Every structure is written in structure tokens, then in C-alpha cells.
Image 1: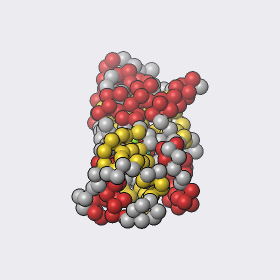
Image 2 (image 1 turned 90 degrees about the vertical axis):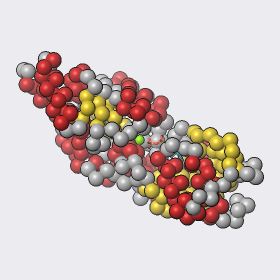
Image 3 (image 1 turned 135 degrees about the horizontal axis):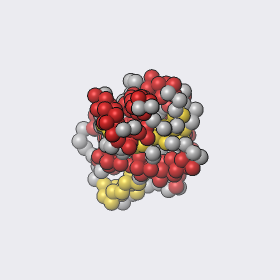
Image 4 (image 1 turned 45 degrees about the vertical axis):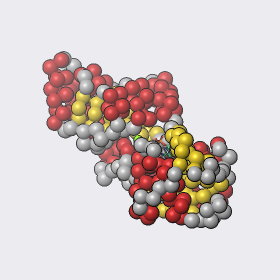
Length: 298
Ligand code: ADP
Ligand code: MG
């Protein structure tokens, strides 16, 4: 496209809240064959809420929910993950501001958080992989967890002193227009692939709601990046949509990165296009405008 027609395209996109960093990003958008989409905060609202909880006894706290919630609040206060604010709100609604004393907090990317409580016991809060790697037996939770996951809940486990103490089901609804936007992108001829750090059952439930048959679950940030490189190696021209710090490497690697405008600064800085309305329709807008821009000069 000529510089002028590209500028006009960039302007049209801006009218729809789609901010294009440079003309090249808009031009490449017309050639995309595959669109890789992060789940949490991109397909979903990214405002998770705890909808289920179950507490086990036998941790020395005898199923004392308030004390376990105090540990959860203390652990997640230190984390910036969206799941952390869901858990902190849930705990606060029940126990107020009486969080426990903990120290030696660490956050594990794509896993959860850990700390030590006032009695010197190790605390671990996060996904199944994190707890299993630490040798925590999740057997007692398995049936309940699978049932919640099949309802598209993300399950977070709490272990105290190496023993399973509680599990939480967290719901993060799809954005109101995600189903329609995915259909539009597929109608535009794109292969839509969902990537997520969340577990396989939850991912499958969301993918089914969206009629996406291509998804990968349990991914670490470097895995998202590698998946894009792999698709590019197969000859695909790959767009990536994401919101999180975790998505930044993948956004930078993609042929065109699309950041959710309400997402993290790192994601926005790594992307060529920012979706100010936070809607996947913005990706379809960019692609359609890009194609029209190129068609005009022929
Ligand atoms: P996504 O790709 O879905 O945005 P992340 O890579 O951020 O996911 O996280 C992957 C998984 O790690 C989450 O689904 C959750 O199970 C777990 N996790 C990460 N951070 C936390 C935390 N602060 N508290 C509890 N669980 C966490
Ligand atoms: Mg995300």
C-alpha cells in the first residue's frame, strides 16, 4: 500500500479504537492466517471471582475456615495476578482484614505463590502442577476439582505444611462479545488457536463454548512464545492477542501483536496494535481495514 492509503487505514482503525503503532503492522494484518489468543483477560473479562470453596481438616487447623482464609489473604496480598485479587476479596468478605502473619513470600510465574506462616510451616497456593511438584497429595480433591474445571472454573489449591488444606473454584466469564468476535474472525478465514496457562479441563470447557477446536493448556510464558515460533515454522502468518506480562514475549514474536488496552503496560509495549475497547472485534476490524487498504491500490 502507498503511505497515504496506509495512513487512511490507520485513521479508520483509530476511529474504532484500534491503535496502530506503525503502518507495517496494519499491512501485515492483511496476511495473517492464524490468530493465537490468550484466554484469561483476553477471551474472558479478566475479573475472576471465587464461586466455590472446600476446606479439608487434618492440617493442624482442623478445617478452621477463617484461619485458612487468613492464610490465603496473606499469601495473595503479595501477588499481582488477577486470581490473587479474587481470592483476597473472597477472604476479606468473610474474615475482614484479619490476614495471618506470613514471611518469605515468593511468587512462581504460571504456578502460584508460596510463603511461611507464623509457626514456620510452608504455605503453597496455586495450581495442581505447582503443588504436585512440591509433593502435595491432591487425591482427596481430584473428583471435586475435575467437576469444577469442567464448568470452566480455574481451581486453586492451598497446602499448609505439605498437606492439602483447601481448594477454590474461580470463575472468569467470557467477555460479552467474545463468541461473536471469534465467529467473525473464523468467517474472515483465520484459524483461531487458544493458548493458556490454565489447566486442560478449564481450557476445554472455554474452547467448547467458543467452538474453537485448537487450544493448548498448562503453558508457561516461554511455551506461548515457542508455540508461535512453531506455527510460523509451518508457514503460518501469526497474529497474537494478549493482555498479560506473560504474553509479552509471544506478542513480540508474532507477526502482528495485538494488546488489550486494559492490559498490562508490558503487553502494550510489546504489541504493534492496541485494542482500546478490549474487544476481539478490534482484531477483525484491523484485518478487514488492512485488506481493504491493500485492495484499494490495486
Ligand atoms: P493465563 O495464561 O491463563 O493468563 P497464567 O500463566 O497467568 O495464566 O497462570 C497460570 C496458572 O497458574 C493459573 O491458571 C493459576 O492456576 C496459577 N497461578 C498463577 N498465579 C497464581 C496466583 N497468584 N495464585 C494462584 N494461582 C496462580
Ligand atoms: Mg491473560
